[in-house]
Image (tube, rainbow, N blue to C red; front, side):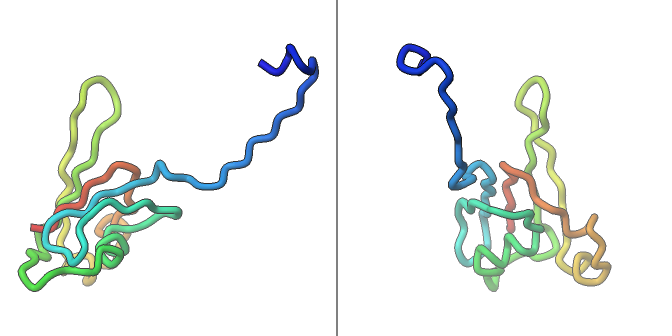
Amino acid sequence: RLKVYQENAIVSVIIRDVNSYKIYVLGEVARPGTYTLKVNTTLLQAIALAGGFTQFAAKDNISILREKTGKGRKAEKLTFSLKEIVKDGSPEKNPVLIAGDTIFVP
C-alpha cells in the first residue's frame, strides 16, 4: 500500500506481546479462569497459577481437554493423577500444555 508514496518502502514489525497461548483452568481450584502464558507450562504449574487445589478437589482425576487438529472439532480427554505425577516425576505424567488446553479439576 505504501508503493504509492514510496516505491521501496522498508517496514519493520516488532512483536510486543504474544497473546495466543491461552489455557483455561476450571473446577476445584482457587482461581479458575483464563490464563495467558508466555513460556511452556506444565499441568502442575498451571494449577499453581490458578492458586492450587481447593479442599474439595479430586486430585487424582484431573482432566485436560485438548482439541485435535484436522477436520471437524474433536477433543480428546487426558486424565492425570497428582499422586502419579509426584511419585513418578516423568514428563508423561506432567505434560506441557498447548494453546487452547482446558484443565478441569472435579
